[in-house]
Image (cartoon, rainbow, N blue to C red; front, top):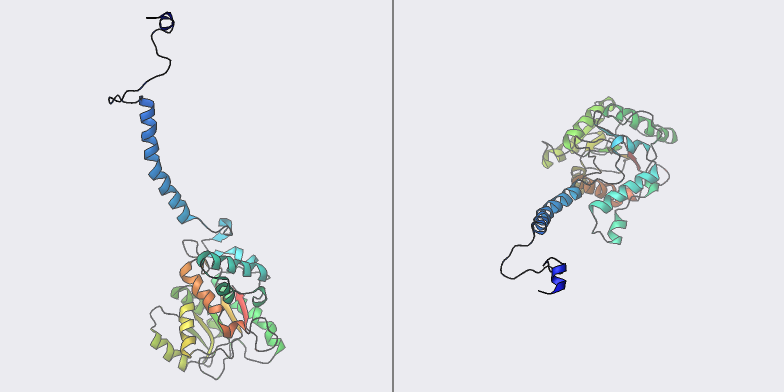
Amino acid sequence: MSDSEDNHGGVPLVEQFSDSGTPPPQSLTKRKREDEDAKPESKRAAKKRKQTKKPKDVDDEALDLQLGVNHAIAHMDSRLLADHLAQRTKRFQPDLSSVEAEDIHITERAIKDTSTFKKSRATENLADYVELYAAPRRKKKKGPRLSEASEEKGSPHTLVVAGAGLRAADLTRALRRFQTKDCMVTKLFAKHIKMKEAVEMVQKSRMGIGVGTPQRIIDLLDDGTLKVDGLERIVVDASHIDQKKRGVLDMKETQGPVVQLLARAEFKERYGVEGGEAIELLFF
């Protein structure tokens, strides 16, 4: 043995591992095992984060579960609402071409600014909301009051769009004060009402206000039963949220039909125009 080997106590300067199956140090084995265990968990966590991620413009402090209201909608003027709608469309329909996106785009000019409404957007205040923003139009031109309807059957002056049948039923009850024997507040939704029954009901109804889900309203328009010649306003029930804190614009299955309805050609050509032919778009 050389003097240098004696000085180092017989310990080689470089640790060598044989190919004879000698296990690696315990610390390395443990670290490798921990890395392997962590990888699947990390993927699951990432997937969960992706699924539960909320839009950046949703503020939990604005969500009132007791009232079922997203108070943020009330503070949005026409420009902010147009941006909000566009963001939702981009989120739920990311594959739209620029031409397709333009076709369903709702401009700021189309939306009436109702951010001055002082009361909350709770269900019981809907009638006051509609009455307040219908009043200026009544002063400018002669026409039906909210409790009056066209003699033509199935021709409402107001459409109210809700995300679900049960919600539409609640809104129908909230608007009953405008109903008379000659002016119906009519349910236009699929819950428990088949399309054939809905067509027959609309054909027989002197309807002042129609309340329904977007797809049923689209179906009745396509059928030709629901007429819009005398339509003055569309009210979207945008502030209401369910127990999962979701509104009609926060779910793909409802946001898409809402935008499809609002972007119909017979509506878009009348948004923001002057005179009695205009359709006002309101987000309650």
